[in-house]
Image 1 (cartoon, rainbow, N blue to C red):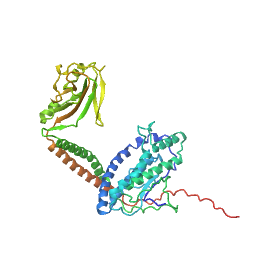
Image 2 (tube, one colour):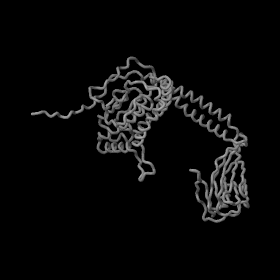
Image 3 (cartoon, helix red, strand yellow):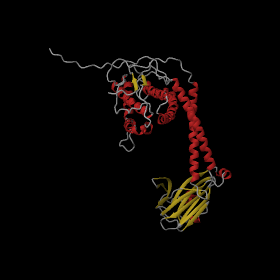
Image 4 (cartoon, rainbow, N blue to C red):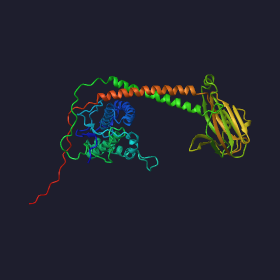
Length: 475
């Protein structure tokens, strides 16, 4: 059996508390916050490493040390917490290896990755991700009955209850959960190119790696020879970079959306929606509780914003009416008359809620005095409305008020020129993003250099000896 370069171990040789696992989620909150920052840095630095391997054929050593440290930290937190519940020793806040901690991880020397591997590593990992997803995922809503827990979560829950009621951790479950964690870490290490060799399709259970032969303790690197510089500056840079990513993504996304909206404007400045078909057997189709606030401020400060247009075409051959009115007035008019309220659109069709008592014709809509804007036509009509503050309802009905409405509707809103605002937001987002990436790279590589030296030479606990079967001898 070949040795995989990513080596991890777990020593479950202590008496575990019966109840501590109930509150470990609370105790681990500081670690979860730290890992959120560290994993964001890992993603950014992995992209940098991908480019370095692609163009130079070398994986930067500080990035390698940082990524290994993040996986090591993750494994310690998972082993203490809800990946295995294998120890009550609180995990240390460090990327470095701790020889005294029961959960350890280190990377053996290996050949550098091939230059083409960054292009296909994610693709080659899909079979592993599919299998691991099947182990970790919960059942879908379509299953009968739905499964609230995945396989590994269910195994962990069984182990936790066994620990609670018996005070003992089932050894077989421990080995199985560690095996799943080992498989997950191997695939993760392959995706981030820490290990160029393809991970085996193998569930290696137990706290120690399945070495071909137990030829004594596993050799560890020599002790670190010199003290390392302070990590304060690197930590500050990493945290600042991760925090700057949030406004960078927000500004870039907002700018891109505004530019996309601006590109969709027609010559009159309107942005038009796709055609939606609406149909009902009742007297009207409504879009209700349309709330407009701050329209006066917008229309004073931004030219043309607030002009709305509704193009309606009948598909039933009857003259059509469309109008906008205060919500309370429409409620009074349609009281006791069945009508369909549009609640959303999905898969090309509208979704409705039926309101009113029974299907019957409504009084002639054009004769009502409460319309703020209205339009009608024999085949098609266009409603123009400048939005003002208030709560409104949009009504589509037959001119006669008869039941059975079938129309095609296209909505449009006039917006100002957004090129300058969108370009500014996008440029600001890109600049802040570049600054954030630079800080993350500086902080992550700084931490990587701090922990790239070899670890202390305390050897791990030897694996349990393998008992050889007795050899029969002749008498």
